[in-house]
Image 1: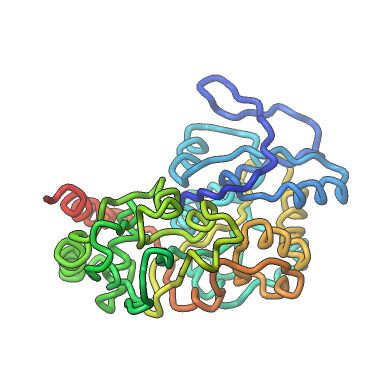
Image 2: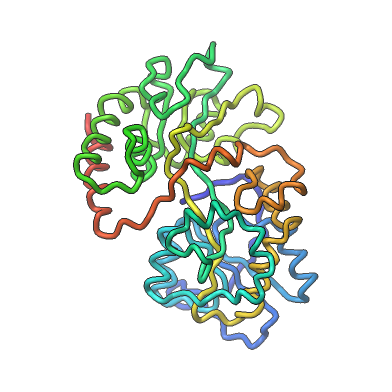
Length: 351
């Protein structure tokens, strides 16, 4: 999933070789090269790791799984750790792109929530992937624009006419179709033709008439400006655009009890990682409870992946960790993804 978070990241410029591919012909084994999502690694965490392990961490960033995967498949070398979401982690495991985690170094693995590993069916024993963060898109209602709280707290809120002309859903087929499938009591990963056609009908006939547009980029700004009263999207996008002192009076963010599509980003060591030992140390370091709490505090994330960190958290999360229990990870659908593509084109471009 693409993350848009208005926080500052320590972002080091990395050497770029011909055709824009990262390369590193180094012999210094005290430099860790991290390839992570944009704005996803707190500077304080990086600095503490550098001090404790007497090393340097250099960070390169990407905005989507597709960008990361394409760069690595094109031959980019020199990275140690990458942080793919669940569907791409599954693909990278099957293609032999990852190296096994050294569990003798993973002394903090017992801090990881078993409920998260249960959802990670592609690697439940963390052979290649150690969970970094699990999140889910939800619903944001602008309380300053709605005179009462008389609205459904389910995905069918998008059929509510009081939001007509002031609602938006993400320009993301797996998210929107997944929400419709869940509303119909189906799996977000269903490839059954009847299920998908029913989801399309629900979106086209009940939800889309109330939408201004499908928007995955600027809905947070439009929500903060008061143009959108109802948004489907990631909490960090909405909260990141509203001043923190106005969160309580402006934002009602919730995840429907029926669940919805979720994502799980995991730390993985690349097969040709130059600094395998240091990479294992970094992954274990992240899951020290007091360190993981710094990550949560930086972004006001809920404490779900590492429950032991909760006692060190000092900020109020954007939503409750328990709200994610009913969510379902979006799996790699292989060739069946074409079914979603076809339906999404009909949804996006229908009058």
